[in-house]
Length: 282
Image 1: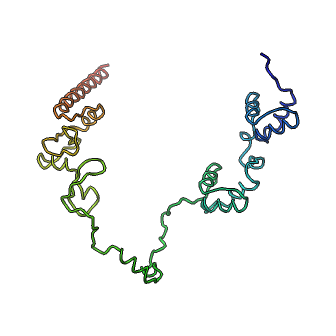
Image 2: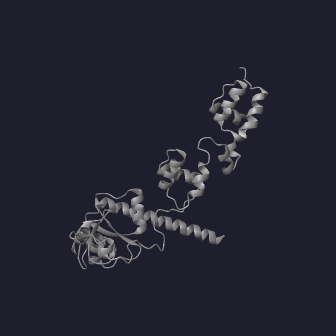
Image 3: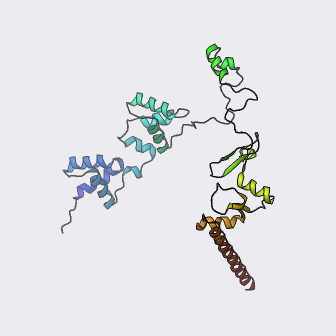
């Protein structure tokens, strides 16, 4: 099978202009001057086969913007020199008005990120920032508008007031993690106001839960917090049961699986102890 080879003139032209042209431009120039039929993709393959690197990998960012043709001339320098303190939305509007482009906020954000242009705009309040309403009275905030002031006062929390949907002490509900919780206080943080019901029930019957131990459910049902359905196991045992998927709706099967897990844990401890003894004896 014959292999087509380009004449030396093509190699000389590509080698000369590859550092300052894109593949599309280089293909058009080569086709115009030498009568070839390059496309941008074929030119890219030709360069790769013969080791002619294009300008994108050789030129600095500043040099690249001198030769590129995708964006209007001077646009990069304008964005670079005017970005500090300007949001992506405002910068997009400024560039569109000056250069006739169609940037939106997202495209401008991506453009500046791609070319390492910093704006200093984070989108959140910085440490030490003073709120615009600091030191102002409610009347000043409402600009002494009686109607606006009346609407604000009508929805304002009164000192000592409580939310209308607040749950009383003793309420039992289901938390986001699927466990039942019981309200024990009206003040404090979330876990000062609420307690896990299954742990509370166990402690009411058996006293404080030792460190490193967990209260779990014999039938695997988190909703069944009856003391007869609760048992105390180590966190390691609980992790092994969950990892191996051994919990069952049948309490007897769960207890049998737990006994097997405990035997396995004990066997692992014995093997580890013997391994350490052999190391010490050497």
